[in-house]
Every structure is written in structure tokens, then in C-alpha cells.
Image (cartoon, rainbow, N blue to C red; front, side):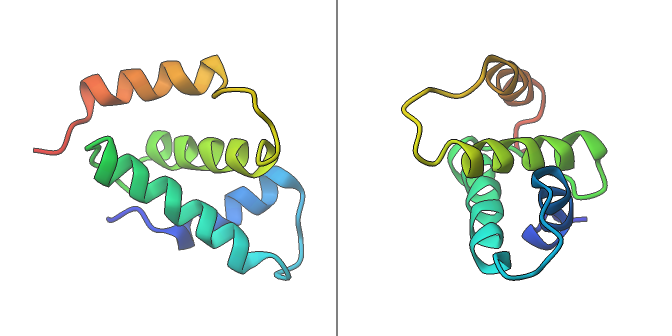
Length: 92
């Protein structure tokens, strides 16, 4: 199954503790931008049925949401996972 923002959104909302739909438009845009970056810029093939791929997208979207005003770079654990995915999960 294709990775979509609709798959990422509910877990992203859980992760940041949001129960309402008031910010869904913004959070969906973040989720979609993460998916687009990973597939179009990084060349990854993301599987919506893969818990690993799904949670990576959620973690990256959470980081984007929580660090929107920060000058700090990407956390090491996300960088390391992205590096591993880029080595092992390229589009065919």
C-alpha cells in the first residue's frame, strides 16, 4: 500500500497529544511534505503497510512540527534511521 498523509496523521496527532481536528490541515501538510521529501528527494520507496516506514514518517513529521522555530538540526536518531533507509530502501 502507498504511504499517505492519511496514514500518518492519526499517529502524528497521538504523538503530539492532539485530540481535535482543528489543526488537521496543517498537520496533513507536514505529513505530506515528509512523504514527498522521502520519496521524491531521497528516492525512498515507502510502504504504508510497513510499521517501520510509517513510524519513521510519524517521527520525522513530529520533529518538523515541534522544531518549526528551532535552528537545531535533525536529531541523531532520525538522521541515522534516514541514512539506513537510504542505503537499504531505494526505489527500484
